[in-house]
Length: 174
Image: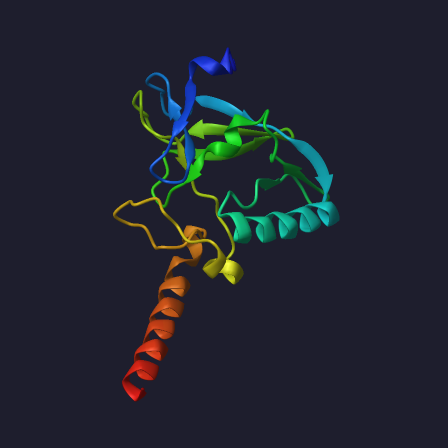
């Protein structure tokens, strides 16, 4: 599959989801590779250290949090670099792209046909344990309000319902 000149497929612009985003510069066919997610190959230990530091910084600045992708059991890819425009692709609960690992490289691939001007998005697939740290701003009809992998949505709904019930009980007692 030809990767071609990637800058013909996307542009970077202001996003209604979160600060900046990546947009289709032309119509893109389903399964077409759009952009490679590039960065520094790091160990799992370094990945954990950087993730924690990025989350701390994000909690202070409101900026992007974590740009790390899993490569394999030993290594991750840290895409937090100015020269990686793919890091600006925002999360969506109804994404139009998918991240695909192919021979140690990560590609953002169209999950469906995408029209010129559409913002590109993929599911970040975060785990459930830190759901409250990752509010979602995608605005789709199916948005769960937090960035977690879809496999966790049923449990997330239950946790939110329990949290809201506790808040309501405290409010009724006060």
